[in-house]
Amino acid sequence: MTDTRYLVHGVFWEGPPAVQPAEPDRTADDGGGPVLRLQSPEGEFREIALRRGHRLGFQVAEPGRFCLGHVQMRQAGSRSHVLCASAAPAIRGKQCERCFVLDESRLMHDFHRGGRVTPGLREYLMQEHWLYVATFAGGATKVGTASGPRKWSRLAEQGAAVARYVARAQDGRVVRILEDLVTADVGLTQQVRSAAKAEALLQPLPATALDAVNARAAGDVRALLARTAVDGFEPVDEQWSRPAHADALYGDAIFGNKLRHAYPHALEAGQHGFGIAALSGANALARLDGSDADFVVNLSQLAARTIVLGDFVSEVPAVQEALF
Ligand SMILES: [Zn+2]
Image (cartoon, rainbow, N blue to C red; front, top):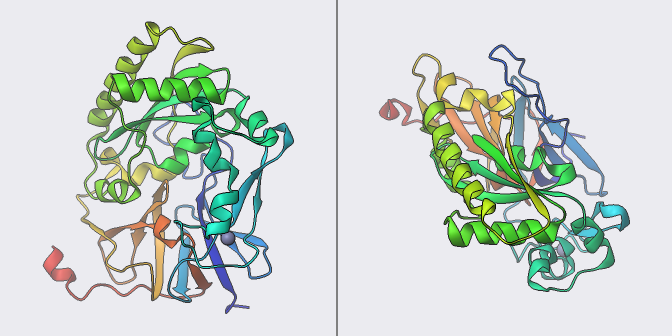
């Protein structure tokens, strides 16, 4: 069974939230239950735990990306995943043209500008939403939104270093109006690229600096919200609790001045296998056999690729000495 070709959907953090406040001696498994989600050729899902101390070994089975299917909104606000009927190559990001067009989650971004929505999507958008300000390892800061049920996991999947919720909105329309307002007035971006997050983790800012950056941005947003005429929300001041799984990737948890490097191999091909020392969003702190260095692996690069699981081992780069 080891030669089953799985399609990688990505890294998900859908377990129970991490608890607040964060204790220095908390265990490695305090929330989120991060997994790599795989789809078998029969369309069944399988999840590989990405907890600290676990090992991930795989071989990329074929070049290119394949369609992950599309999201369909059901009644009662839940979303369901529809697999790609033709297992087609991915043309639009991680989707084929047909699934891109059918994807209802795409429509939610235009709802507050008067865009068309399906009944299921309308119901999803009518639930409570949260506005947050998230800061990443290098200090890049964004404004974003999360639906009620995804309040904590959305930020865990983004790989935030520090984050604060700044408003609770009555629905997904109001929260996106606020989000656009924050971008226009405070200048906060709505997107930080995955590659930028990975790169910043090579040299994260100290925890106190990251918290100061986030607190200042959240304060600016709250000041803006206090004078806006938009109805249907209440300002909040609530810190997001970062999962302990991520701690070893961040500043004050770097022990013994251990050196850290970008993972030296592209994930689009080849054999890979490493121990997971920490995980923030989709970025893992990897330990390679035969090396004392730490490596940051951006697992989001595996999304929409096909892999075979197994006892594979990443090659330690021959130029490693030159890195030190
Ligand atoms: Zn498709």
